[in-house]
Length: 154
Image (cartoon, rainbow, N blue to C red; front, side, top):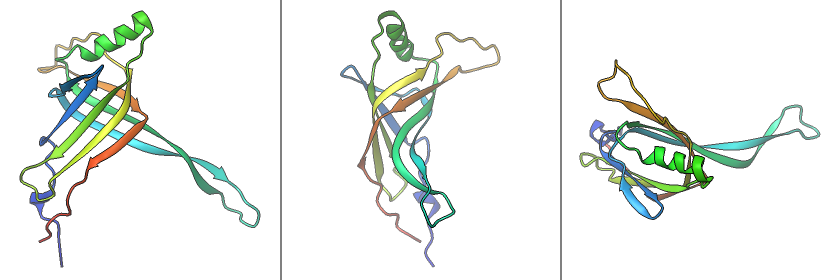
């Protein structure tokens, strides 16, 4: 019987992310956690001869959240630019999961047209040894640029 070796699971600290904002690539070394999800939009469909409701996919929506250490002003600057000028910024985020101890190699996913929903503009917290912040965002395109390899089973 085959099984997944523990060494082939991906360590959450082994990876990196890059933001391309206005043509500038920035390594997002300050990320603690990033999670992006795609959710299908579905319509309820009722048809003759069937009492139950069926479901039909009609589209999708991409959204996510990242928790970052409070050490960059980049996202606050983007939000203030929107407040002052009305110019909204859309950018790309590339996420690479790569654990050198795993035989599955690496995966690269690119989130396109990322747009911020909310940003903390100022923060103090006397109970925190390291300030962080949660940033919600949406995106409207995604690509898997490189897939994981199949694990070598034990």
